[in-house]
Image (cartoon, rainbow, N blue to C red; front, side, top):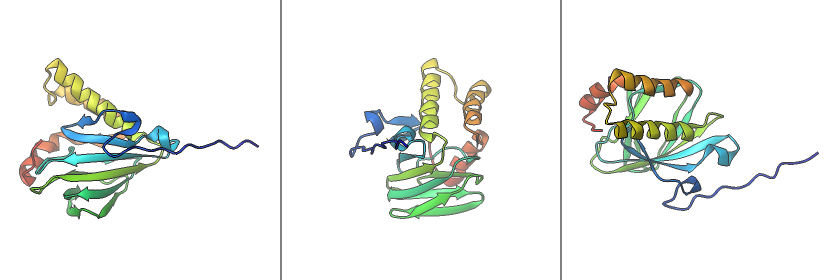
Length: 180
């Protein structure tokens, strides 16, 4: 019987997995700290940076993915279903699949958090594709909110079995005083 030799993974402070660049995901600075492939398909670890009063993604739901958040700096505000939760530095927050949620920084100081996504779905790859789609639309001079471009976002979301409620974003930004 042969045993596979597993390898450890290390990402230095201020670096990303494989020394890849930071991602711009819907205006958020995102860093893949441990890539899905580095864990033999077990999980991804993402670090997200939010400026003061910066909105995160539109409300969304994952059908095959759970998330564990650990706030490193500041406070992250979450909407889970119809409930608002404040997650300060040092706290953890678990979001199971099937829960509609979003997050933002509703405070005057920056916020940073890690998200650990256990499971076989490569969430880091999804974020890379999402960032690339945003870059492509920018380079095309396209309106990302035009119906044909929302369709491009939705096609990507569907491939990863996510549902994103793009049409709710403006109301959430207005209601919670967050900016893109």
